[in-house]
Length: 146
Image (cartoon, rainbow, N blue to C red; front, side, top):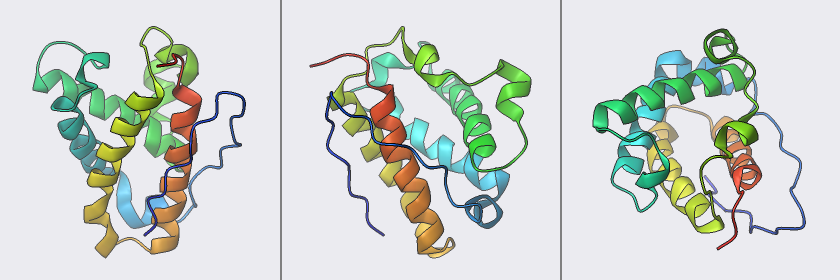
């Protein structure tokens, strides 16, 4: 598995490609929910904790489930995010939070940690396609320099 991070270039946002259609069937909806729970558990103790919901660990796990709805939908599953939150419009939803290139790296580091348990059960091709998606998606979320 290649967890290469595309360098950020403020003058260019590469095109993003949705994950391979085989990712969701291999991981399952519960697997994506578990993945996002692992991600948000890592983020809860990370240097970028401040850009996530205040409150407590329970609030982070609730946020993880909202994110799981988004990723299930992006991976070809039911449109849970649209049904519960409306159209994703993720850049707009993230606009109130200062997302820096450094914050992106922390987020990706936690995502890599969260994905590692899937390496035994998901094909490398499907897992790589998911990583490639979040790698470029994370560039699109940067809205603050430095």
